[in-house]
Image (cartoon, rainbow, N blue to C red; front, side, top):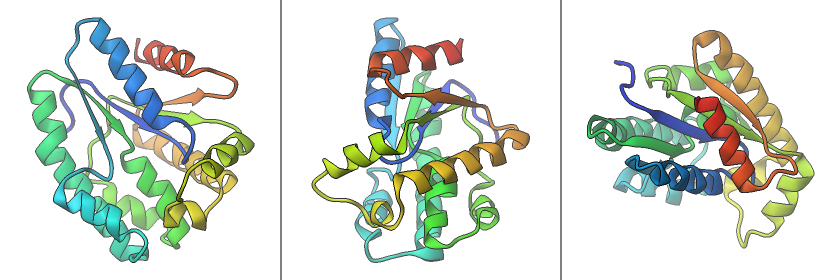
Length: 198
């Protein structure tokens, strides 16, 4: 698949780390500069993405991993590329790294997950947000309901998997920035992302 043209930023990390907050804050800061920004998330809000969200508690393993990969392919074709072609900056809450990390909790090896996702282009920058497991545990306890994968894993396990994926992608030319969120407010996290973008 062709590479990405335009500024495509991905915000990644374990559940409870503050990805959605960072995406909203980053979009606001970029818009203050007069830039056109499109925010998005995975799974998407498309019919397939909604099916993936609704099916997480019923599906697992390869079936779920392939459904997520299919949603990502449509996401690129129907939302990300058109927004970039229109001159917008695209910021996505989750992308391929989430599949590579979280779907290992379903027993799928990293190499197999990469095979499902190797066709997707690397973003301009993937920002991996990281915090201490105790912080993530506290935030997850505050949620009214946890997803199947959140119940299956733990913050410490998710962090270890994301760390493995970060190392796995380094030699594959995937532009990444590790953002330490510990004891930093959301605005400081966004400021660090902007620094990484130059």
